[in-house]
Image (cartoon, rainbow, N blue to C red; front, top):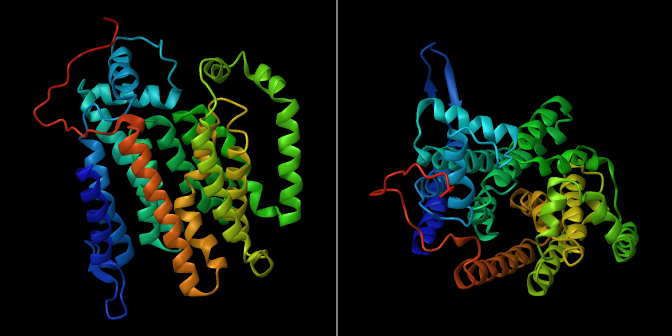
Length: 373
């Protein structure tokens, strides 16, 4: 675990080394065209902060539950001409493109790690109200570690978080492009498409309670119909092979998300005309609604990730609903502490996602192994 601790500390330190201060201006350089180019210190800080998690994930070896069975052997199955895995078209051709230049599977893990971290940090730079807090949330929410296991889906999730900027800019074309890119990595990401319309919704507390009651009623009586509706799809077949989320995980996840939502609702009357606030609040509403059916439908955690991963940028803005700065810092500290405790319990004690012990590729050689043996 010490490798990850050093990674988190290094990432934050690199950001603060370049972070803007009152007496430190942006950096001006001259390009080859003799034009003055200004580089924001925040951009440099975020770029530097991305390097430690990027490098650690890029040079990992057999880190992540799906490392060997899905991605390592899948790379060589694609190289052998097999399509048995049923990979999404974008991920499949991404492998084929790499294989034009090399048959070294370590290159696949390096590039996917760079994409996941780079896109996530680009979203933080573009959309976060509090960049260092967002960087910390990227780690303590466990999503950095989950991303080293569920590679395709978290590349898709990172793209979707980045796409939120186009929702706020009302740029439907670029938003659709992001959705298509995410869809090409993991088909389930299409569920994020309606987020474009979320800023239009004004969900008061009373309306939210009505929605929750309706959802619970539907899934109490209609869950069988819902599962049968999906049974002939790829994910319907996956549902049949998986159990619902555990009771401890469900209780914790529901509680944490409700706390985040309640904090956000503290300033609803004053902030309901703020489009960014409505969007971030409604994404959190979606996350809460999904957690409530964890015990009804298998694999709902994977759907939840799409609406929970944006918390790395939504929490800092939603928590502005707590007007008193000292109280806001206290609430933020408590939420971060809870995330850290669960991170330790889930990743270290339970060994979830198999990111421990950490190993790297140095001294290892890629072996052409398709798993058929």
